[in-house]
Length: 131
Image 1 (cartoon, helix red, strand yellow):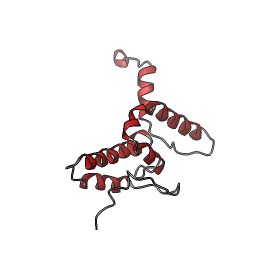
Image 2: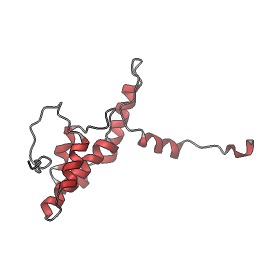
Image 3: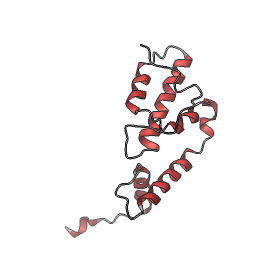
Image 4: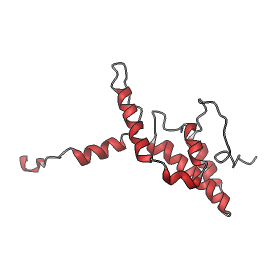
């Protein structure tokens, strides 16, 4: 049985609870033959979708990516015009806001952006002279 190669290209009318597993998307990506421009486009869309779900917009369950990012990959000519940095920052702010609630036990975001911000902004003291 052939995997549905048009899944990341066609218009999807999916319920909001449908979130594909990143492993499944990676298997589709790795099975792509890369012999035509269309297949290369599908490969790149799968790869970008994996990056969105595993690096930029992660959640507690890193095995899944939210389907709401699929429509963003539909028009390849417009991807470069999206403000990805602002979207990542908004995602992090929302996760930090949720984490500040008294009943929250986990942070629902990738902390890479926060770590880079802290590394750039917070001065690190050289404690070597104390030894």
